[in-house]
Length: 525
Image (cartoon, rainbow, N blue to C red; front, side, top):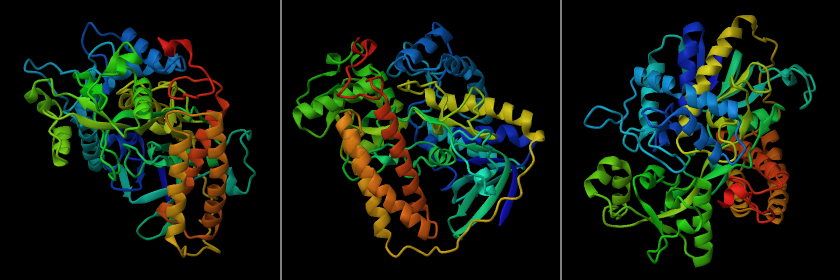
């Protein structure tokens, strides 16, 4: 079956939905999402969305904080674009219906998080992402030009490869014509033809055992671009959130927002001692990479499985008012955070790399855009500044919408793409084969390509992963498509890219910390 549209948006978080709302005034939009429309990384975001709002904060300070956190690896133009356009995008979200917390005087109640000089984080309690997602979903469902396909999985991008041409990385003018999309309920693959395709598929957290990401975060967009011979960069920079709730067996790991440390919570070892000032002058408010490594080191020294986050010294009513979701979650497992310290451990949280894009969100493949965590804009550099990601998605969705609307009339649908070839495929005999490879992949990445790395660990990971890759590809070629098989294939590709990029970086910088290379001077301050 063929489906034709002007704009194909793959993913339904803040980036994809903001983009869809903007271009829907100028053409037909099809949103494809593999779960329910709200099952996204955006919906799980707790802390907030960063934007200069009140003095004494200003653009220059937000830019400076972002550059410092990015450890010298940021693209200045990208940083300036996001910071300076943030207030307009916040105003737009509010216009669509998003509600951010205000104080008794009616001013926005801004939070401060690690690495930020000033309070500049707009939030809705401790479920900011959920509030933004709720707002955007309501808007797209009302729009007459937007069609939503839930439980549809984008399998591969359509390029000249599907017209019988040999496509390599150095092939000029690789062009995207849409995507093959699997209907997960009917088990049919549709050929979706689009003038413009947008990847907003979120992050990659499920390559690790412990992650704050929902199960849908399997790097699908990045893997598809890699297979289509597009440019992917900076995949070595995987951010581990320092404080996920230590609750063995729960997946995804429940996030204890960084805003809690901004509110005054401090990290302690199990014997009650503060320790973060040994690693950074800002103590528990240091950038995430330093906090995560500090916790990791303390756990290695002590041999214990978690440290504590302590907020018991703050006003109890204020704590409950600011963090009701976290309070209820902790209480459900017997922890009263007004009286008890919270056991926490680092968890895979955010990918700073991704599909390389320019200031308009354009990838190296013509008519293909990448937004949000799927993209690598250069904003984050080697380490994401807290709460910069949601605003990056909104700003780049706007830029991509403006750019794609300016070229859409000059693009013709490519109607010669063949239908999906089912020939020779059968339903896999054993689901256990996929499940076991999935677990082995997570074990390899968690043990060898985590917070701290080394050349020996990376080489071992590469060798182990090659075996799983071959097994998964053999299974893929002879099996009918399923979500689990496609996700495994994508996660293996993502793991390969992380190992490849980590091996190539002969230094410790930001989120990439190798035992074989001393840290750069700015990381020792």
